[in-house]
Each structure stands twice: as C-alpha cells, then as structure tokens.
Amino acid sequence: MSEPGGVSVRVSPLPAGFADMLPGPGLLSALLAVSPGDCNGVELEELVRARRRLISWLEEGCLADVVELAHTPPGLVDDPAVRVGPVDPHTPALLEPLLGWTAYHADWYAALALTLTGLPRTRAALARGELEVGEVRVIAERLAELKTSADRCRVEDVLFPDVLGLRAGLLRMRVEAEVIKVDPDAALARHRRRVRDRDVEIYPAIDGAADLAVRGVPADQVAEAYGYVDAIARSMRQAGDPRRLGQLRADVATSLLSGRTHVHNPDPHDTGGIYDAMRDRGGSGEANGRSRDENDQACCVGADAGDSNGCDSPPGEGPAHTSGDGVVKVPAPRAPQPATAVPAAAAAEPSADPTTADPAAGAGQGGGVPRVGVRARIQLNVPLATLMGLSRRPGELGGFGPIVTEVARRLTLNQLTNPDARYGVGVTHPVTGQLLHLHPLPQRFLRGLQAELVHALNQRCVWPTCRRPASACDLDHNTPHAEGGSTTPANTAPLCPHHHTAKTESAWTLHQTTPGHYRLTNPHGRHHHTHPPDLTDPAPPPQLRASTHDDESDHESNNDDTDVPPF
Image 1 (cartoon, helix red, strand yellow):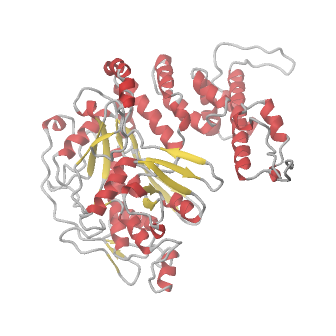
Image 2: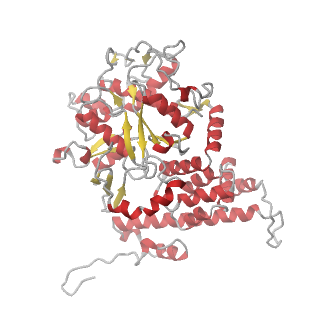
Image 3: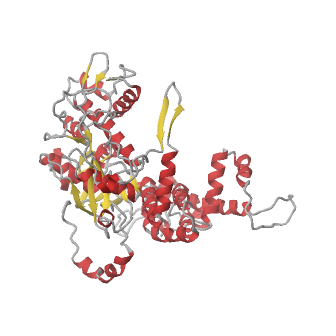
C-alpha cells in the first residue's frame, strides 16, 4: 500500500485488536485467516500468544467435560443425558483407554477438573488464556491441601490478580506462601509428615547412567548441602580443574556419598569441551564469547572468601588440585570446631525432629562430620513481625521457596550469634516484604560487597520467568565492559548461565531503570519488566491493614526507591 507521496506503508496481516482478543470461535477464525509467512517477528510473537490462549480455552472446556462425565451414570448409547450428584471415583479409569493416558496422568487430570469447580477465579483465568493448564495445576493441587472450601476461596482471592504475572517456580512459591499463611499449624503438620517419609531413590536412565534423588529433606538442609557441594566444586574449578561446574558438582556429591577421599572423574577424557578449546589456544581465556575475567567472576559467585575476587582457599588449607589421571583431591577438612551455643528458645524445641534439629549441632561433639572450610552463603528472609514473635507468616529461603515459621525462627536463632554462620539473615518489612537489613554484613573488599548487594536485592536471575538463585548466577554487565559499562551495582544484574548466554549471543538488551528494576528488550523490540522480588509475603497483617490504607496516599507521595539495601 502506498501513500500519496509514494511512500510504501506496510499493512499488518493481523486484524485490529488481535493482541487483546479473548479466546473462542472469533479468535480461531482470525487465526485461520492469517498466514504466518506474512508476519514479521512481533506479529509472529502475537500469533504464538494467541494460539496458547486458544489451547488454554480448549483445556478449560475439556476439564469441564470431565466433570460432567464424573457425574454421569452408566448407560447405553441411546440413553438420554442424565447427571447424578455423587462423583464416580473411577472416572480416571474411563480416561486411560479413551485418551491413551497412564493411570497417573488420568488421576491428576480428573482431580484437577473436580478441584477447579471450587476455584472459579482460577478456572476463569484458564478459560481466558491468562494461565496455562500447568500453572492452574500448581494452584489447584496446593489449594486442595486446605481443609475447607472457605480457606481455598480466601487464598484464591489473595492470589488474584497478582498471580497472573507469575510463572513456573515463582508462581509455586507465591501459592505455597499463601497456603502456609492461611493455616500455619496444618502447614507444619504437612511439613513434618513429608520429612517423616524422606527417602533416597534411584532412577535408571538411558545409556548406562542413572539419577539419584534425596526426597523429603527439610529445605534448609537441602540448601546447605547443595551450597556445600557447590562451594567445593567452585573452589576446585578456580584451582584449575578442567571439568564443567555441573560435572564437578555431580562428581563431588558422588565422591562424598561413596566415602572417597578424592573427587573421581568417571570419564577423564571428557572434560567439557570448552576447556579443551581454552587449552588448545594456550590458555587465552576466551570461551564461548566470554572473557576469562567473566568466567572467573561467574565461578566466584557463592563462595564465602576473603580476597577481592572472593575465590581464595580457606585459611590454613591448600587449594584443590588435579592429578594427572583426572582425579581431584578435596581440600583437607578443618579440625572439628566446638559447637556454637544454641539460644534457649531454639534448644527448647525437640532435637529428634529433623524439622527443628540443627544439622550443625553435632560438629565437634563426637559423630559430627568434619566440614571442608569452604562455606556456602544462603540468604534466609524473615519478616520482622515473625522474628519478633508477633506473627506466624512464613520465611523464605533464598531461591528455594517459603518455609514454615518454626523452621525460620530456629534457623535465625542459630545463625545470628554464630560467627561461622552458613546463612545470611535478611530482615524484611512486615508490610512491603522488601529487605530492611542483611545480617551479618560480609567483611569483604569492595567488589565482594557489591556482589553481595546485587544478590541480596535481586535474589534470583532477573529473567522474568527464571527462579535460579542469584548466588548461582553470573553477574552480567548490562552495558558491556568493553563498551564502557561500569562494574557497579547500577550496571550489574544476576543472570543464570542459560539466560546470560541468550543475552550475550543474541540481540537482547538489559537496562536497570532504578535499583533492582530492569527492562529486558527482546530481539524484536518487545519489552519485559522485572522488579525486586518481595522476599517475604507482602500482605500486611490484619491489625495493620486499616492504618496502611489510611496512610496510602502519604506513603506513595514520599516513596523513594532509589536506595540500595541494606538501609
């Protein structure tokens, strides 16, 4: 099409208002009239979004049909449509041969269909294409744990509409926090029941490999164990081990569980590819488009150390080193240290229960396991009101999700006065959920302190749907250092290796508008916005709700988000 001046103006193949069309027959007709070959990048993105909305709409209709089927009595082909009150418990058995599903698939689908009948807002969001069936399943299965329909509706009302902007693990964490808050006693009972059922399972895989899973362990112990393995692996890599970080974690964990004193490489000939390339170039340090300085910085994240890079060996210990046969020696463990005194409030809890026992309490008292002197840094976020005993709102274990109040209090009491604490405690505002104070402040050089501030503020990879803990991410220069970007918190963001590679190797851009607020722009010019996470539940306690509402206008007029915590 041309304007009078002879300038050609492209006409979009998408009808007007296409991006906002609700799923249904109208959207289906519009999709059938569009040829993807006529669309540019932005228009193809809208086509993908529209098709996903339509799929969600169809899923909601299928779930509704399953509910009807569950209330339909047995009958013949020519019988009239009849519905009965009781639900047929064998409905999943009908779905298995009908759709070729496994019993597990049929069971969860039928249960989801029936649960959604009591969650009208969640069901409506699925029908409008605002949530997909996987996300609806997360909401429904967690809310089904609540005892009454009133509690389920109350949590659903709290979740919407904010939950529409969350995906994957971030959505699960938000739902879990609300479920814990509505009935803390029931949440603690479920937690203890899950821990009582803990076990180790093995899953044979293909190609002669297998997966090992440890299930039902309290989240704080899992976080500490992972951080311990990760810290050893990073120390070994910093010392020159050629294996990839993921390979090192697996080899460290397997060697520890097998009782070896060396970290064994099951295949010394496979050292990760990119390191072979680095050695072939004479150690130039250029790998996958990233400088050696960037790789070093990435592997330093998460180590609790004292030099300017945060990667030195623990005091009194030599670094891990590699022998010629691909076997790496673990740094010698420190002599066991005397156990730190536990405050009376924590000691009063039953130590026989893994949900309240301190995993570090046995160190140095016989039977304790000596620990390698590389410490993981894990951030435990606790609302101020919970810390003061005025509320039972859940805490949050950085990157791992909500934890019940009793575990959060016990961990806090054990860490605040412990100079060798593996956890940092983030005290959060009882109303906003934002960070107020981080304890203890790490005694590091400027670079390490800057990294700690970036981790504490963002908590996770800043990609909109990613939940990888910030301490396990690369620290990305939003404006590349080679283009004049500064190495400061204002120009730095945590990105997991996967998304860091996507940004570096494609036409994505990342800009920090204010501390912790980022604008991510994709190669087709579409903007995605992220902001600092609410580290704990942001909803005000009931006794504060009225006063917060009265002061809302004053709070908004005096709000200043320019300070970087801790304040």
